[in-house]
Image 1: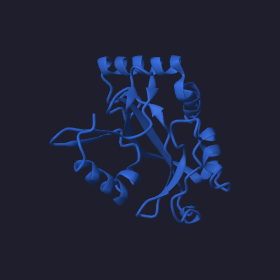
Image 2: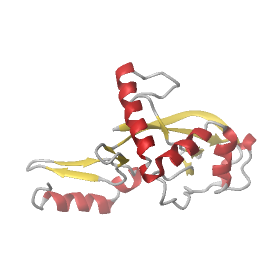
Image 3: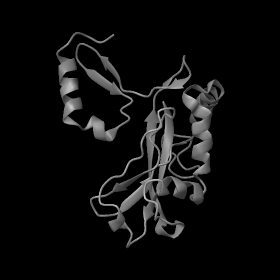
Length: 185
């Protein structure tokens, strides 16, 4: 697993009425992550993000907070392997995500969805998240779909990359059906 950090901005007060639901971009199939989108919370706040920046630790929510030297070295090693192999346009992903440290680049991604958003409309927020991303070590690529492993007594859903899909009834039905089928190898 390689952790990726999602950081967000929030629409300032008075602008959240511009977004009445969640707004997602059309996915770029050559890139492994969805990209910046707008999410309305149950409290009416609208978050813009997330980024998909490699994190240096499983708990790396700050600049260096939550990092441990050995773990950070292992993560950097995996990231270098992915960067050199450049499967799934990994280099392009890294370069585009690094640019999101600059507010203007982040703003342009948000404006593709809601053109009237300005830099002043986006305020910093402490909201962030770490997403563990499964890496296929031998093929030096990110695993972009669920990996289901089954034993006689359990089913493991690995790389659950979509919280919305993982909580859907259709996915629950799929898992129940898996529990009634022979062992997955």
